[in-house]
Image (cartoon, rainbow, N blue to C red; front, side):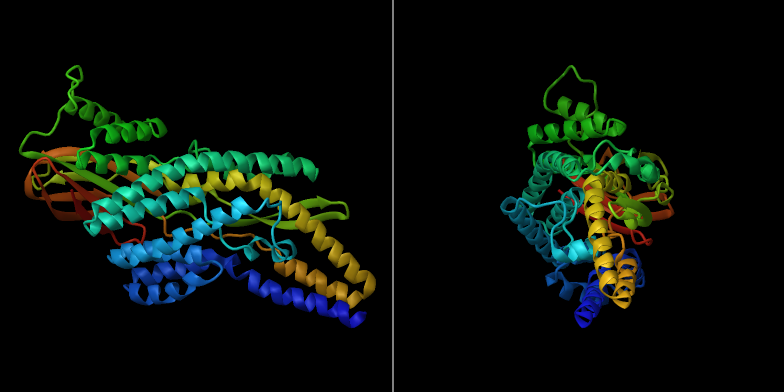
Length: 451
């Protein structure tokens, strides 16, 4: 009996070592970013790619897709995102087949949420499809880009339905398990502050705006207008979207609208600015009451101090005349915080059940053998780690702007947010040129797309 009780903690400590690999995920993600910044993209992808088939392959696939795109490898990025989409599809299939519960999997019940495969978040799904659309545009595959943009927009509709069901389920489980979630509300004031910057964790004006730019470029003005209105509904502070709506309505023949449209020797310049990097999750410890007493449990959260202010990008022509100034169209850091805030109720239920299970295990071990009880207590302390995983190479903000410019080859100047750089572009008569500026990795990455 004593040997068996000693073996249980030993087995659990082994399980903890496997399950808490991602408890320091932000540190690992920082190392990947340093590798990228040092020009070691190939070596970095060599580390990430083999892991795309592992249990947490979804997270590795998303990171690999992003880093490959930042490194100017659209083909490699495309394959990585395709891998991520397979994980999402598998997830959806399992959700349809399984009724699920507050806690799934023995490992998760005995250790922490890190034992569960990373499932991704709705905003991450949507960004993955948007970035994949840009891969297709870079590869001059308009049909592929159209498919991904439709998927990105569809995901926003599906996410609304899924989130409603998840919140209802969390309410039901909290009531069933008699867990008072409200008593922990004050401990997440910082998370609430960060989450309060946006109205939704998944509605993404950037995705709708990118889609509208594409549809207008391929002369589907009706589809473009629908997506512009969706983008403006989500982010009415982005005044340039309202101007785009008016311009497109005028272009479609509404003479009542006073707006400038491109002339025969003009085209559109669209600037997309992905500023900074989404913040890391932080770990906090809260006392969770159980029938046996309080138990310290680790939770993830976001600190609003990690979300710096957005800085606009100014775009001017070679003579220094102002062309446009970008505006925030998506606050990704705030979306991540709101997503976590919406998961909190279900998380508290899981953690309460887990705390009760761990406490009961410790008491059972201590009653059988004090040494086994001591080992189990050590296990409980070591295994209590918050799940800090997230797609950390996403930008902190996405900004955008649009203007009409004369067709032809020209040089524009980018300034602001630590950038002071000239870019040579070409604008076709009646066409659209996208200049995409990314500072997620520190050193600016500038991509151009012509349609």
